[in-house]
Length: 158
Image (cartoon, rainbow, N blue to C red; front, side, top):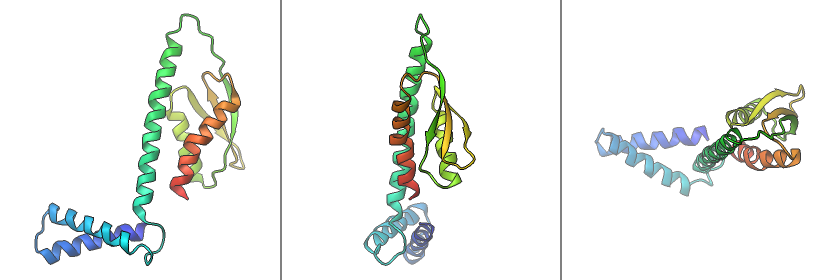
């Protein structure tokens, strides 16, 4: 992916120098031409087309924003209930993520979402221990995290 980005920037500079216009608009035009060239020549360039990964990163960002808003609403609803009937607890989330970067990203996304907090990671990096403010069903919580954040992280990094 890094090779494709560097190649795309090189194409943009070449376009700028060949058109003899040293403006941002000329560079941007060359960058767009580079995107199109790399798309058509993607069979000859190693790795997958890098805009696919950029799209997946954007999807992960929008997923996090959606989960942030939804969990904020649910935490506010719990806080304004006249009678506080919540079931807090700590549960272990088995994870399929391998690298430290992936596990750290998942733990941070969980901690940044209101109502949940990553407490610890097991020594063998296979489980993340999470404290939830209200968890009536542990399996539902585990499945929700695995189907949203973990799945999106695996799409981005693999």
